[in-house]
Length: 521
Ligand code: G4P
Image (cartoon, rainbow, N blue to C red; front, side, top):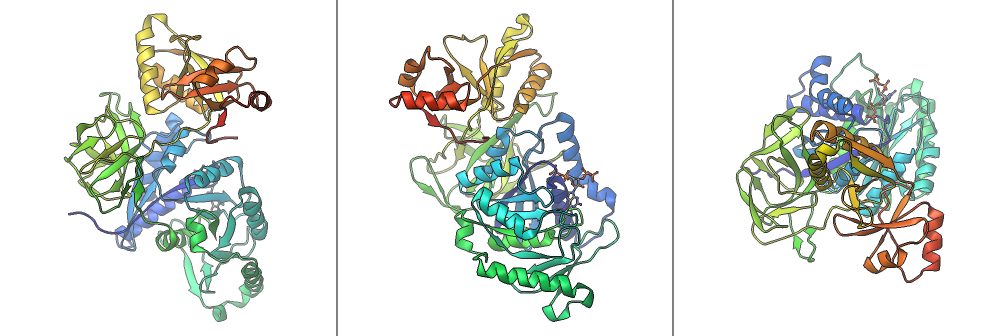
């Protein structure tokens, strides 16, 4: 039976340490509490689902079974798509963002807008993903709420429209003023491990004497915000011009239910999607999905390849035979899984917005479309401007064949971008990455999975611009630049620094030198 409940598919993004794991755990806990009709769980149960996932992620230093946590809330199915939790930045994060309809940006109240937060905001803007901002750790001393609003406006250019406003400054969290109803949502501390969000809703007249002063401060700021066009604007939010803001303490489980309510009330449901040829697939049309992540080596016993796909339209049924748009070949979905941490469960059906893990998906690549019925092909998942470059060579010449195979596989999975040129030959491909940790992943997987030790040597390039064949010819031999070709055919001109790129562009206006979508920068 297809599950017709409405969907919300989102990701939580943040700078490391802002509290993403804590919030995920709180959401999982909340979902669990609801699914099991309010059963109270001890700390053990609370740890069981999520922490396994985190532990593995930490042990391997990289996202492993990134997938989705699915739960039911207020008769909606919520898909929380995991983003890699490591401190470095990699293209994985960006790809995950192609699979969600909205993002929750977690900001540490004590730190403000950190570099990774800014980068991720930019990616959301680029992809037109509506962002809800959660100011976390309000239970600890931090910046002022109004100051944080200014930072968001100045640094990101999104107009913050707080839906809740803190009562009590950071470190003295009494609760929030719900700006839509004017109520005081009071935060009550409960002894360890409560499953329910410790919230009590009070009308303004019911506020205690003890909270009177901070409450009236909050009311005053709320009125100020009203004058400053900081009230919620649904069209602005969906168009990526404004960001609803709320204040929370993930650790204390305060704000988690409010966040879920916001997601259901405001965040977009899966919608119609345009294919490369401009035809539009509505959610109720025949089944289609696109692959946003491919992973292998999860089970060292069999060289399994798992392709994560987001359902775009129609109902997925396990066992259905779909068409792989890139090759036109049939693909049998005999095995499909929902993967969350170590737990994999077999998926029988899935709806638009859901994430499925397709097993034995050797033919599927990142960005590929699968469908039934009328043909459709979705635009490729974007690649981002690499900022780190190395040359790679086989650490053991006797294992060159394994080396080649490994590089090819990692290239297909999108672990790094692989660049080549006639000049450098095939033996020493250039690997390009958005974040340097991508190289560590390559090293680890080459050594352990492909049994092909690899050696890197750093290259002095700092940025890449897209050019074409004519540009490649014209740039050959110029100082401070080298042109290589990525395996998708794109010509990339690598420059030693910004300055060199600018001067080259200025002196050669006829050469195509186009900035790529910036992941970093
Ligand atoms: P991340 O996944 O974004 O990297 O962050 P994570 O959840 O691991 O949180 C980083 C640290 O911040 C953790 O402390 C966590 O307990 C703390 N934290 C998260 N949310 C809140 C909050 O709302 N209030 C406060 N006061 N702290 C918060 P840690 O000491 O590094 O780890 P742990 O020993 O507490 O697990």
